[in-house]
Amino acid sequence: MTLPRLLVLSLGGTITMTPAAGGGIAPTLGAAELVAAVPGLDEVAQIEARSPFRLASSSLTLENIVAVAGDIRAAFAEDFDGAVVIQGTDTIEETAFILDLLVRDARPVVVVGAMRGPQQAGADGPANLLAAAIAAASEAARGLGTLVVLNDEIHAARFVRKAHTALTSAFVSENAGPLGLVAEGRARLFTRVAPLALPSLPLPEGELPPVALLKMTMGDDGRLLRAVPGLGCAGLVIEGMGAGHVPAAVAEIVGEVAAAIPVVLASRTLAGPAFERTYGYPGSEIDLIGRSVLPAGLLGGPKARLLLTFALAAGWERPAIAAALAAYA
Ligand code: ASP
Image 1 (cartoon, rainbow, N blue to C red):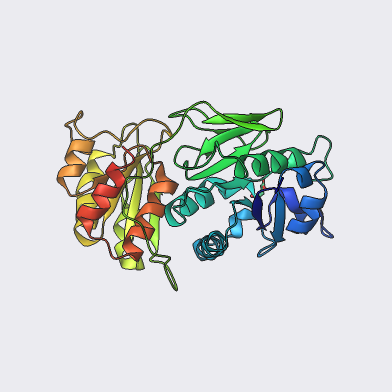
Image 2: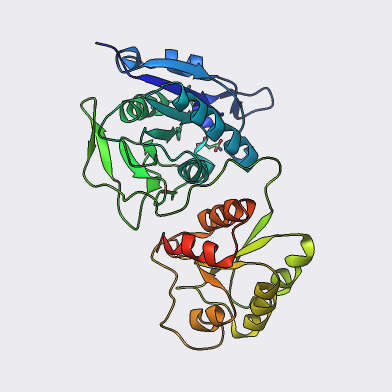
């Protein structure tokens, strides 16, 4: 039997980290070494291993992930059956969301990492990589867009979030739950996500438009908010309180900023939709939407920021951006 062909790209992260001269751990291992360390992986897929980056995931850039999306698109043009991207867990949800936007192929793309380094007791990297490869090689995972696999759970890119700094069960999908799990060497999907109802996006070239993300907190006086357009930002995402609220004193400043650049309103609560038609006081979602702010649907701040970035890079105007956000509502 011919095994499925997988592209495995390693970008760094704890899963690749070994002790550094100055203390702590730092990225060193590449994809080939990681693949070689997983018992049974050679029975799952034929793997082409590449290591484009060896970075902590906090240092990956959007442009790095656009390049990864380009590599996966090229591999899919060459008959690969799936792709696995290995990286640090800190920004896995952002990488997965970008690949979900930019790859758009029925073949699975799975992003994976580990919460413990390879030399720590109970290292979870090998098990996570095996589970990720099983998912990426499976028929069952086709048509679900980009997935994140850790702790044997399969999450959809649009829902997944890192929700703990330490546990191997750090990844959650609060709005939906995981789509499935990997058990006994098989990817089992309990539920599926609908295909993204968005126009396809070209692979952007060059620098991406800068989009700011600001979290509202009690007593915020709007001074950072007011500065955003003058800093050269092409867009802004506000993580509002609760269902998407700001202090009354800040509402007018939000309106001034939204007159200059697109402003998206998400919730800092991390689950549930940004509201659109419930609260009617100054600084509420109805007030802010009346000031041209666009509600983020179920997207949290970081993912709303990515959608706005790539929409602006594609030249989308506000109605198209609003429609794209509504696809996540
Ligand atoms: N700080 C690490 C990173 O994101 C954490 C991890 O890989 O889990 O690169």
